[in-house]
Length: 106
Image 1 (cartoon, rainbow, N blue to C red):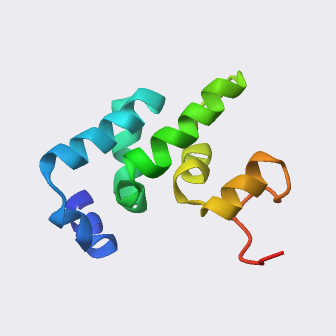
Image 2: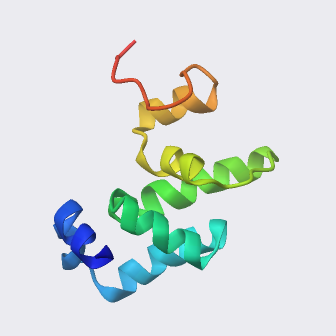
Image 3: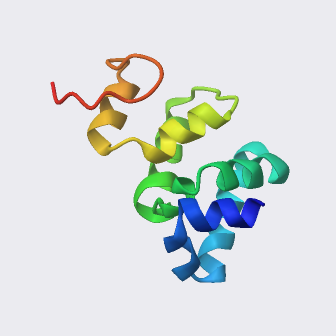
């Protein structure tokens, strides 16, 4: 069932190398543990589409350098991974409402 969901929700991930998928999954495992990371990836294959080097790692490093202690949840990981750069900047500064990112360009 999980494989079927991945296939329908994110067929492009089947073009990724095993090494790429493993590295991204390991990134999420380090934040929330293996079981939760796998559950999140199956639920939201968008997580595997995000660049480790250009998006995920730099954003995590920003948070770590800020000194803020984060208890990672699915919601926070979604925010880290999915938000556009503009949405991420507004989110970091507290300028966006909680929940789904705004599509308004203000």
